[in-house]
Image (cartoon, one colour):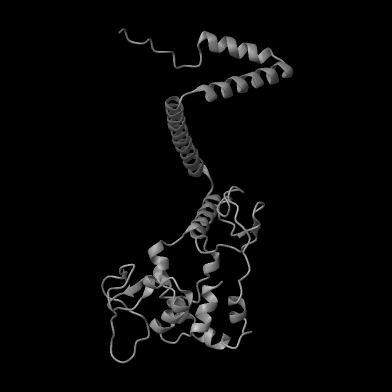
Length: 277
């Protein structure tokens, strides 16, 4: 297969000169019509291209953009350096002071340094002026779901620009609402033992090796692996129903009584209320 003839890379070809001369003499109406036709042909070509061609085109476009930006950055740096060589001493001094202030404002410590600053808080440091810590206030409202967001959050972070629709929160069902609002005789007992009543409906038990140090434990410390204990769906002969096995008893009265029996500090009444919600 013969090698492909390489096209001329310069812009001084005969066709380029002809096109340039023609465009120099055209009026505004012809220019607008020509540009509209170019946009239409470009959109049609992009719509008809295959995924492979589109991927190749975007890669070439990204390479050209990166090369152009690199060349422009080098050119700007060269022009700036040449201008700094011939500028007066006073102007050079003012530029140096401005550059130092700009670098100070843009200076942002690393994540590790900010993490350590939480343990070495400096009251003299104004953390609100740092761009990486000043998140602003929740004043931006989404036009689709009316969620309030911080200035730096993405537009579609909350509802994906209206594509995600959630139902409104439903009210707390009865009699749980009355128990929480203190309207029933057993409300105070229920509120004082919320964790116990929550544990009465769990399906598994929490397995861990708790670490204790002396007689005082300010925190809940665990050493080793954390896991869930789950048994069979039905108890062994002679054993009582526990955890997930209670869900298969088939009698709500016996189920409430067994839950209150398994979890100390609970009563049958509130458990029966929750079973019938």
